[in-house]
Figure: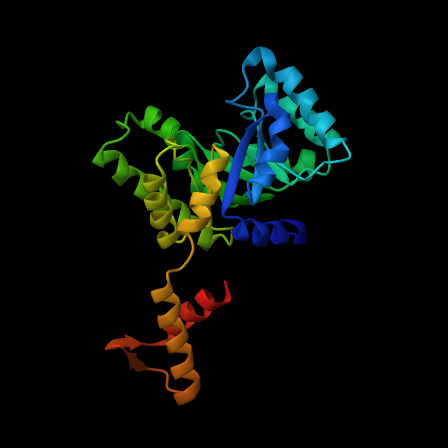
Length: 280
């Protein structure tokens, strides 16, 4: 794996909030960064109507060339489509992009062609049964940094009814598959899909707890106010920090590999987790 992609993987792992901005509203990019989002994604795909895609690309080009430019990720259209090739040309003209999100990724060649043509890191968005089925082979693609997924699109393709316990089971299966595949192939931990109800802070917070406990790295956001909710939900509780502090203090005091804190057995994995918690 080349050093550019390796460094990008480390950066992606640190990004917790990925905020979408339609390319047709490029004026919102500054507001997106002001929201505290770790990464901003300018969307040339689903958020842009076919008749507006040309003007959307022009707007992104103008933003890229402006004095106030901050590096953004760009979601481009599906590989092989007419719009895809136009998006690639734009990416070649805008070398200071942070990277590319490839919509509806389904095969290794799609990912590698994006990377080879743009020299940018790629996040592959899985939005079809075929893409999910081929995730292990795509994980070997040169230029791939991470996976994410579009759950609503996947549900449509798999004929899963959204908002049901069955959908929750499928979603967790997808998360597990992406987490395992990413770990084995030394990619960044995957990025969770959007939470569509941006007015439901409690539901969003619960979702954040779920994917973070599973080991995913971050989350796609569709509204600026989701950013603060995600960030707050990721903060360790005072009890968590207190326990971690006592674990490290006892380990450093006693030098024992196994001991008890509050009746709970502590060994190497707990000690390592406590170190990670205290260094965040």
